[in-house]
Image (cartoon, rainbow, N blue to C red; front, side):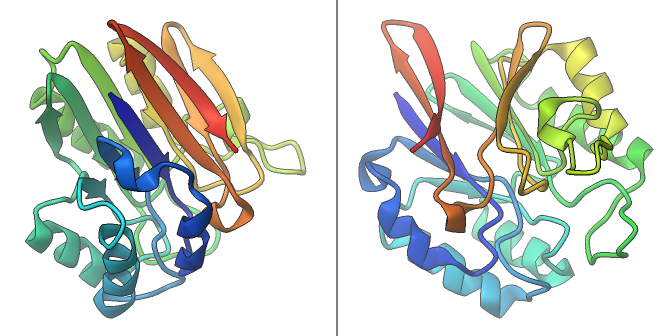
Length: 216
């Protein structure tokens, strides 16, 4: 089993050509921010580019995708936001958008709503042998939410959920400069940075043993 995940595409989908092995991955996960303040038509361009290489995809909007992107992904049946999907015994669930920012971006949620949506999505995959959590906003006070001025700006609800539930992996994004691998308890947190700058995540399973890497 091999899973490739990335996000913060921001319409730079030509960068997909550099993602080695994308076409043969068993699953592709998009963590959010397909567009730059874009709508469903812009998201369609991105999803179509990914599907031309691999149709086994789950995705969700980020904070810079407007409400029509949420609707579009739901119509396709691939929206992770507040949902969970089972694939060969692996559970994937997510929450798109972000906690409130100073910039009033299109898709932001209060912390209690983020927590509710995570609980809702996780309920569908709670019995999975491996659980992969996909919050667009990273957990608070980790390497994945650190901005250059030294502040931690991630979601406290995401962190609280990880501390309480301990999924196997947390695949996140949102903070472009916070490319990192971190851990809360047994949960491995991976943030690859922007796809346009060459960042993606690869998860591999071999004989029941999982490994996780930032690529390239």
